[in-house]
Every structure is written in structure tokens, then in C-alpha cells.
Length: 458
Image (cartoon, rainbow, N blue to C red; front, side):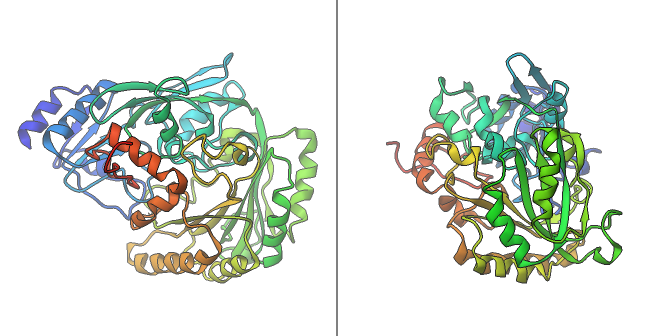
């Protein structure tokens, strides 16, 4: 191992970090503190050549490989014990072509990096809801956020990707080049290579009306949301949350910490219609607190950053469904009334509008016909509370399961959800497994929600 480490150190321009180095403790940690792992080597890549050199070392040594973009993997796949972590955080440059309305970003960029670059030109592309999330994992899994109803998923706005495959080949994938791999990258997760750069289509979004609106945790609020979101203008991104009332000044103190329903709004339509959006929100129920204002689009993606900082423990479950039935709403009310921590939330992402109009086979994202993606998100600060929070998340998922589809959004899956991978990709799974057999027959990229290579290539 020492000889391999020395050889790799001589080949990379970035940093090679080993146990005992002064920066090791900081470098080994990931966003989700539930995964406290100790890799044998960490490569902080400086360029694509560092990626190819690292993959060569992994092939030579047989070490396990964890590829880290933003490091937000709920399942902890951005790190490993005794293996090699390839950290792409240094590949975070973002360049905008304002005339073509495109943006090219390094594979280690976060949504804060990308949104800031695009906003300088009044442009944006669908991304996540926490700014420190990496663009890579979110896009490769599909990409849920505030702009989906208007512009589709993040992966629907991907127009090219630079990929280093398991054998070290460097490819630029798009609709007319390496089309099958490009198809798989849009929803198939990190199974097929290291994406060192993403190119996105941008849209005009100079600013938005956004922020949270809080209601009592009441079934009528959820039913009204269920009925009205699909009729709302597609420029309204409105996520439903079940969460403890935050200790913020716009919410009365007697609601702090109490289970509440909330709608996280992002209206990217004309300012002249802001009042209409306010009325839409008021019609959902009795508003207990609201922080709705005009803001630059990047700001809406920072509003949860303080509530969900690095270092919390997370255990999530995900599922797809149609509009929540009354039976499903009863489950949400039951578990929402006994949220296990101040940081925990359940989120419902609507998948209608532009997201639902993409043809079912156009990308590897398999649930174009789903009305909603749901995230059950236990998050907590004290590791001593892990058992209680995880049990709540598992029980919640089991109770909700009869009212959902078989699979879930891959980026909401915990590390014990490996048995659900085929369901997550359902009609696309066999096609993805055949491609895996062609581009990664040895399953080098296996620290993910893994799609093993098919037994034979069709």
C-alpha cells in the first residue's frame, strides 16, 4: 500500500492525504455525521488527469473507491473505510455562456457555486433546495428542487457531461455522442463513471417570490395542497413540508418546536402576479407565520442551510406516489405529530408540469408518471439519539408503504436500501445493468446505490 501511495502521489497535481496527516481528520468527514469512516487514502483532485491517475491506482490495487462531489450523500457513499476517496471538490469552476444560455461546471461544484455564476446573468437551471449540495449527485440521481414544475428535473436540463470511465477513457457524452451513457447519467446515479464536468441549459430567472408559509398540522391543509398544486401555474414551485416550527421571529413563540405543515414557495413568474400567489397560499389554511418576499433566485436555495448544517446525523427514506390519499395523509399526520427532533422534516415534491411531460424512456429517471416524490427525513445532532430517530423513519416508511409505488428517488435512500435499487429504476433497470456490463464490467463504481453489471451484454 505504501508503494502504491507513493506512486500515486507522484502522479497527481492535487493533494494526497493519508491517516496521520494534519488535514486528514477534516478531509475524511462528510456532510452526514452518521457515516464516520476512515479511508486509507484521500485524493483531492485538481484536474481530470488526477481522476484518471486515481482510477488507475484503484484498478492496480483493488482498493474500494468512493467518489465524492459535494459530500452530501445521505447513504454515506462519499467516503469509505480502508479504501480510497476521490474528492472532486477542487473541480468547482463554473463558466456561463450568456448568449447560448448554457453553463459548464466542474464535477465538484455545489449549487451555491452554480447558482451564483448563473444569477450574474439573470439565469438559472433547476437544482436542489440546500446550497451546499453538490451538483453531481443531485443531477445524476434526477434532481428535485423548486424549478421542476416549470423547467423539468436537473437531469432534463443536462446537455453534456465529461466522464472518465472505469478503464480510464475520457468521454464527452451528449444526445449525439455516447448517447446510451448520456441517457444513463440522467437518473442512473454514480454507477457509470466519474463526471468531471456538467453542461446545463439555463433559463431566464432574474428573481423570485419565495419563502416559507406555516400552517397548523391539519389534514385539511394537506388535502387542499393536494388538490390545488396540480392546478397552480407551473412557475410556482411549492413543496409541502411537515416540520417543527422553527425559532424564527415571524412565527409566534408558542408555535416554536410544534409540529406544523409548511409550504416552501418559489414563484418564478411575473412580479405583477405576486399577490395572486399570496392568495393561493392563504387559501390552503390558517397562516401562523410567513416569510414571503422577492429575492434573487440563489437566495431561496440558502434558506435551509442554517437548519441543516454539516455535521448532523441523517437517515432518510424516499418513495414515489400519486397525490397523497386520505389514508396516506393520516399516516403523515400520525408521524408528523411525533417528530423525533428539531431538524427532522417530511417533504413532498410535486412532479407534474414540465417534469411529467418528459417521455418515460428519455432518461434513466423512471417515475415520470408519479405525482409526488416524498422524503422522510429524520435528522438529529446527538449520536445517542440515532436509534430513536432511525426507528421513527423506518416505522414511518412501513406505515406509508401501502400507499406508495415500489421505488423511490435514489437521492433520498439510506445505506440499508440496497434491496430497493431495482424498484427505483423499475422499467429501466435491465437496460442500465446491460450498460453497466459494458462500461464497468468489474463494478469498480460500486459504492453507490449499486446497479451490478448484467450477466451478459445483450
